[in-house]
Length: 115
Image (tube, rainbow, N blue to C red):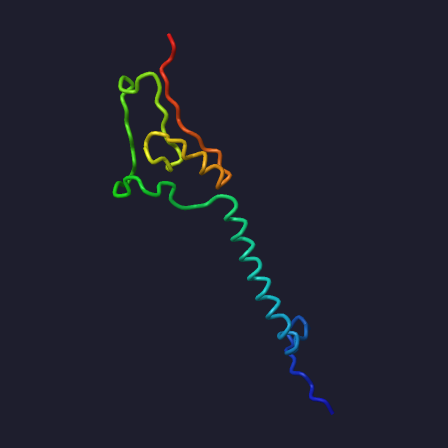
């Protein structure tokens, strides 16, 4: 006479045998791992959280640059991607940043009005 598998009967009347658990646990673990990896992949493709400023004035709680309009001349081009080697001025580094990340950031251009 074969041994009867040990079953757990819950109040709902569902019988769960040892074989059920042996199948359900790996499926649940694989599903959880797949869900986690998929969510990481999708979140890495969208918005990356973290610091925008990677290297400028890191000892300061806030980076602020102020310029007088008289000092600008006829036109000034300022970096908004934080990648410029001439920060706070734009050196075109946003082009490479945009190609690598799919972003669309560009410079801030300030110029005097033609009178």
